[in-house]
Image 1 (cartoon, protein in one colour):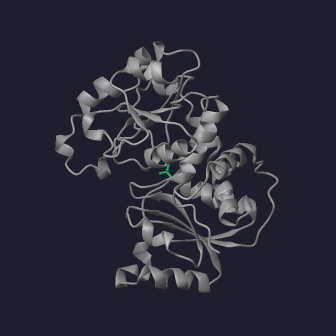
Image 2 (tube, helix red, strand yellow; image 1 turned 120 degrees about the vertical axis):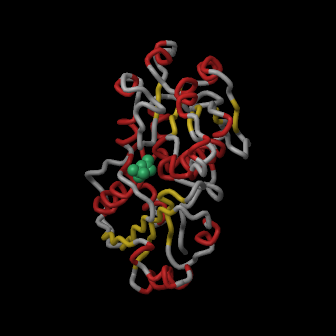
Length: 293
Ligand code: CP
């Protein structure tokens, strides 16, 4: 039976807790080897996720292959069903997909091979959510009602969608503090915060999200200076925070927009701790898809 990790909709609280625990515990130098084949299909740019899935596969002894829509027969009208059937016939057991498409439901129907989202449109980025949750847990943030507040282009963010979904399943709400144009349409399990003071009162961790210029329809409407004045994390904002306050970022970081150059060097900025879980969260997702956790 193919087991997907496309989002967290069908996962139980216990299963999600196991994914976080596995990500924190994995020793990447002593992995059990498997001979499975994995196809990485990335139709959007990626620095971290693609490499982390490749390295994770290598650590597990899996062989990876790469493809994308531009060099496949999709351009000739190939249907998803036939594409997946072809992969299965070649012995590929896991498809890792990054796409700007929003048809995640079609992939959920697939019974032939396991599929892992490596960033699916604006809908999901579950392995990022797992490593973010592992980072929150490392810094003891999974204790308050609102473990984290998201700041930035929340509306178009798959990092937010998966983070909100994962944390909701564990019984938490998430904070959102952002420009009105970036607010999510669905505000279930969301606490809208209206000032930095409200953010500091609600939680001691924030995740900055990039202003996604490639997903904003009309860039001319975007007043970036106004955004920076109100929502950029700078030294004066960080000076108002408690000692245990942390700032996270899934990267790519636009230094000078969501965070100032000085603040990006502040020890409260924990993106390196997130990076450190990059490979283990992908190993965890492969193991989950192989029903090994
Ligand atoms: N966080 C993240 O998804 O980074 P990449 O786009 O570089 O994979």
